[in-house]
Length: 273
Ligand SMILES: C[S@@+](CC[C@H](N)C(=O)[O-])C[C@H]1O[C@@H](n2cnc3c(N)ncnc32)[C@H](O)[C@@H]1O
Image 1 (cartoon, rainbow, N blue to C red):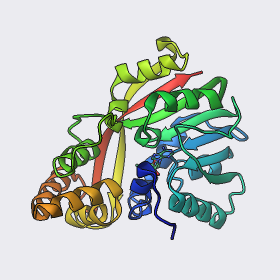
Image 2 (image 1 turned 135 degrees about the vertical axis):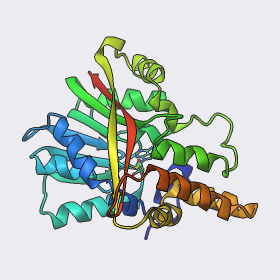
Image 3 (image 1 turned 90 degrees about the horizontal axis):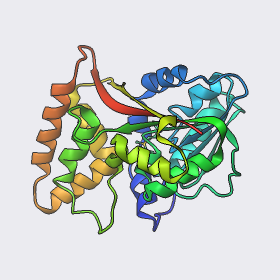
Image 4 (image 1 turned 180 degrees about the vertical axis):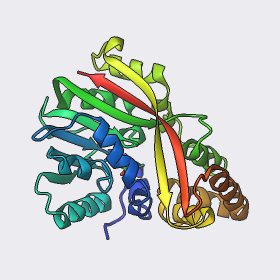
């Protein structure tokens, strides 16, 4: 149990228990890592690593992995998973994507951030930090949810926003990382020309051993952004409406017959430094 944080970004992700959602993301996390060329001894930074959905498979492939995350509970959970698996080449530490000091410049061959750095504030600072810690010729791979995409996560965030109080002045939506022009502008600000950035639509599949309404309950009870949406809905007596909208969404997106299986589209960004 960690003490409550004054940093709203940290407090959001320490809320609940994201490991419950991450448990439904393992297979796609592993598949994604297999598609990035990560060989033995490659130095990998997994930024916004959670409990190691991509850090752990990268370490299993022989990479020398550091997972950095703002949520102290998730860093502890990742460290525990790595220790249980005997992965001495997989370390986790608390850090903020907006300022990765004391990590030295050009310390990594690969920087992976799958639905991680997109959730940090100050996107231009985040892009600069990602570029700073990646060696020249090294590669950054980001996975970013796409605004207005019809699949699961973009729709959860869209539905939730209707129940949550408006964000503070100056707040930049994480979903803006799912727009190619923004990505080019942000990495451009970090000195990366547009022709070093490539984009692809990719799919990440959530797998949950239960029916869609039970999967909604996992989000309601353990996923910070959805917990906040339910807290907002409760203030106006609209929790049942939110539950119903999410259950309809999860059921409509489910392609599984045994358990819940929901594919979600994301923008894969690859940057050569
Ligand atoms: C949707 S989760 C994804 C976690 C992990 N990459 C995975 O795929 O399971 C978003 C993660 O980003 C982390 N995060 C949010 N803001 C961050 C920041 N400013 N610096 C570092 N990590 C951050 C959260 O704590 C959380 O673990």
